[in-house]
Structures are given as structure tokens and as C-alpha cells.
Length: 407
Image (tube, rainbow, N blue to C red; front, side):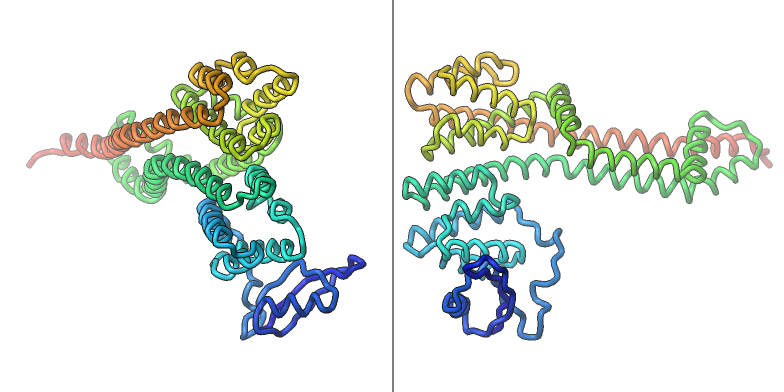
């Protein structure tokens, strides 16, 4: 088999090339004999260089589920005394995701070259978050990597479950709404004009509903470019504005004030914060460092600032309970009281897990309620719109039929 590689020599110069070998180990041995440090290694297709060279980022996207499976498999293999580099090579060879395969191969090469696993993971933040890297780093100190990886996998799986359940509840109504809008536009552009021409030729006065439909149809057919420009501008705004610091701050503050959904998001952020913090503390990471890590994982700038403020107070010697008690609007009294109990008993991570369990049930209940409410609301909305459309067409037809002379 042929392998392409990138390596560096002792002077730091980058060297690229291909090499024939029976397996990856032989390639690594051959490069080591030449005093080369491999930074990239990939098997070439027997028919040419087609394999691995075409990269569609959408299809190669690494999901959180992929990382969960990887973490569990790595934990099992390391617990079975398989060396980390060999375990990473094995996992890289069995994954179908080309991006994941390439990254794991590079991590394995780094680890084989003497790099700590946490530092090797840290090179790929798009896959291994700060939380993940710090958990692995703590495991390297404690010497209990399999247990920590299992804990990380449990945590990521929990977040994945809540996210997928929420998205599942919203997907159905969004799809139905989009399909309805598409059908409505097609009817307005291609069907209504022909019917209106027939109705208007009779000289009958048209009901206001029909006049509204005519106005919409004419606008869609004659000023479609305005709609396209507005839609394009809105899409661009929604994509790029949240990426700016000002936009992120405005949106993160606004969504917390939305009725009903604001409370749901607040509970979600509290649950995420408590679970991340509990996991980090249980891994032996100091509370100040854990707070700094979690602040970047919440995903909301309002909570990020508050958590960093809490961290400053904790560093100055203030207790967790007192630090959080100033933010009861963002951190509920239940969370504050549980933090107080955990601090007094020395079991903060256990108290935080109780908070996680409570808010997880609250979140699941809300998602189930949302799913059961939103579907009938969508049905009623669609029924009203369809009824309005049908009435706009049938009312003038009925008027015409009643005014026709009888024989």
C-alpha cells in the first residue's frame, strides 16, 4: 500500500512524499529511521490519489454523536491497556468520516512522537472543545483516563439528547410551514391570475378578500425582486450579525427576554452550566479554572460575563453561594440554594448534578408540551389561511352564479 506523508526533520523543515509499506507502523518506522517526525499520514487509494482528496465539508462534518462514540471506544481500548497511539490508529481506520480519520491519524502521530494526548487534541478545537481538552488534561494528572473519557461521553451524550429532542419538536412545524409558503407562492403566481381574469371579465364587484389576494398575486409576479432582496438581506443579517460582538450581545440578551422561551433558555443554560461545572470539578480541576472553562462553553454572552464575574469573586476568596446570590434573575433560587448546600457539605459536584436532573426533567417536559401545542396551532393557522384563499376565489364565483339569468 502507498501512503502520503508530511514530516519535519530535526531542523524543522517540512518534507512531503509517498512511501510504500504493508501498514502504518512500517511507515512510521521508516520515517523514524530517516530522523523524520511525521505530522500527517494518509493511505492512498490503490487506483490513484482519488481517496481522501475530495473533501465535501458538509458530508465530513463531525457531529457530537461521533465524538461521543469516539470517546467511549477510546475509553474501552485504553482501559484494556491498548497504548493511546495504537488505539487512535485503530479508531481512525474504522471511521467512515474522512475528516475524523485525518484528524485522529494526526493525533496518533503526535502522541507517538511524545506529545501529551491533551495537547494533541488541543490542536483541533473544532472537534475537541476546551472542556474536552481540560478533562483529558486532568485525567493525565490523575492517571484515570478511561473513567474521565466515559464521564465526558456521558456529558456530551446528555447535551446531544436535549438538543436533538428540542430540534425534533421544532422540525415538523418548520417543514410544514415552509411547504405551505412554497405552495402558496406557486398558487399566487400561476393559478390565481387565470381565475381572476375570468372573474374580473364579468364586471362584478369583488369582495375585499379577493382584492387582497389579487394584490398579493400582482406583487409576487411584478415585484418579486423586492422580496428576493429582502429575503437575501434578512438571511445575510441572520448569518453575519450574530458573529459580531455587538450582535452576539444584543441577541443573547434579547432571547432571554422572550416570554416562555426566555425561561426555557435560562433553565437550559443553568443546566448546561451545572453539568459542565460538576464534570470539571469531579475531574479534580480547581473551581476557578473550571468557571473560566465553563464560561466559554455556555454559548450566551450574558451568562459568560456573569460567570467570569463570579470567578473573580471566588478568586478573591468569596464563597460560591454569595457570588451567585447576586444574580438570582439569571441563576434561579433553586440553583443558588443547591450551590450553598454543596459548598457547606463539600459535595458541590453532587449538588450540581441534582440541579442538572431537575432542570433536565423541566426541559423535557417543556419540549413535550411544546410539541403537543405547536402542532394543533399550526393546523389551525393553516386551516385559516386555506379557508381565506378558498373563500377569496369561491365568493366571486358564487356571486356570478347567483346573478346569471335563469332560463
